[in-house]
Length: 272
Image (cartoon, rainbow, N blue to C red; front, top):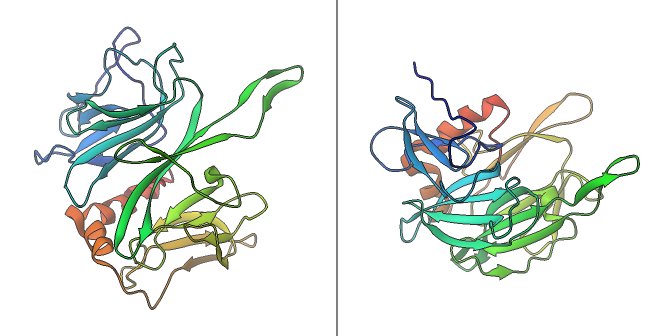
C-alpha cells in the first residue's frame, strides 16, 4: 500500500526490537512505532519523531504507556546506538515528543520492561533498564554481569527493587488481576519461578515462555503460556481472580490489549 524510505543521511533514530501499533495521537489512524519514530499506518508519513536532531542510533526497546489517573501518554525507550558523549541512554518522552526525563549518559541499554507495583490501592509504574556489559576479548566477545537500573516511570527517580535474580531475567505479568505486577523468571537459577513485587516466591511453573497476557478471556487475569521440554503447552493463571478497577480499565482501553494479543502472533512483540 505504501513504502517509506529513511536514508542513512536522514536525521533521527533508527528502529527498535519492538514495533507497537496503536492510535497514539487519537486521530482515528494507527501509528507504527519504528523505534522513536511514529509512522502513519495509513500512508507511511512521519507523525512524530522524538529527538530527531539529537539522536541517530538504534533504540532497543520502545514502550508507549498511559498514566491511568491523568490520562497522559508517554513513550519510553532505552538505547543501544549513538554513544556520543551527552546522549542519554534512557529516555521517556511526553505525548508531543518532548523529553519528560532522561537518565544515564553511557551504556549499551539492551533490555527493559514496564511494571506496576504498590499496595492498598496505590499504584506506581516502574521501569527496569539493563546495561549489557560486553567488549572484545582475546577469544571473542566477553560478556560480564549486566548492570540494572530501576526508575519511576513518570519522574525518572531512581528506585530500588529487591529480586533474587537479575531484573532482566524477569518479565512482569498481573497473574491474579489485582492491578499489580508479578514477575516470571525465564532463565538462571530461579528459572520457572513466579515472584511477587518484593521478591518472594509464589509458585514454580514449568516451561519456556510462549506468550503472556489475557489469553483466555473468561478469566479476569493475565496468563502465561509456557511450553515444556516435551512440547506440552500449558496456560497458567488464577481461575478465581477478582479483577481490580485498574485491571479492567487497562484491558478494556480502546480494545488495544486484544489487538496486541493478535499482534504477538508474530512472535516478536512480547514485552509491555
